[in-house]
Image (cartoon, rainbow, N blue to C red; front, side, top):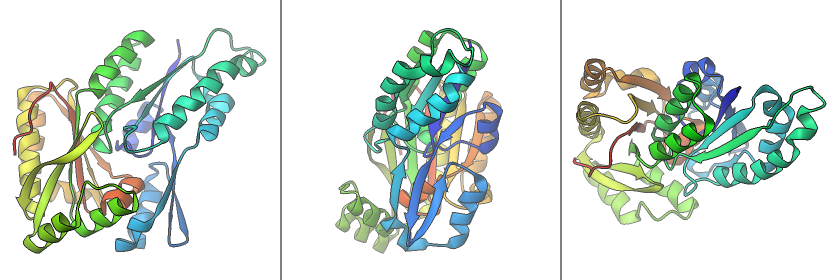
Length: 314
């Protein structure tokens, strides 16, 4: 059985990994001050966004995830001919409508695929399975990584689906923002009360940075640090400890909202790299999506891994 993968653009993974596993990215249109960016994880488009240095204006951006009609078109015009089963992974449904869009499209795809496949001489049924990773940005990476591994191992679709749902329920996504005022302005635009004005003012005045966590679709602070560099040290030290404690998927993904070379110079990152090397864990580095930078601000770090349920300790 030919099996494939799609994911939405807000899942942070390296371009080389996407190309190696022929993962189709469902794009997000981002409009800022009259400019339009197509967020499909194309490194050139991400760099164009960074080079434009839109700064504080980006928080007012409009984002338009792939619609149900566009997902349906993608599948019926291409994917139902190229594959016999496709797993579509999305960021958490609590933060984006893309999951609901893909689910709605799946009903039309599963009703109409025979009219496309049979005239092309493609026999047999077509399967489409939609998975909510229950996480965001780098936190969605473990489920996509595991899906690619299981497909390469030619596991049965039912086995893959069960495993991916398990990984989604045990994926942890962490974020360290640079600019709390930006984060609050964006949250306010989206009617998200997770970052209050008082917290933003206090944090900026004292240079206190929150460490935020997304777990099973819920996002909130789990730690704080005096300054961005101390926050990076705490986050990477914590991730290194989790690597040594054992992961459900042998990978950690780190993404950065800007020049990716900055990651290796942040305090604690070398220790995380060493822990991954010693434990046989793949450490993946990815540029944050344009959508991610619009929502949390440039210069933020996100990090994702899958592990047994545990309490955050910062």
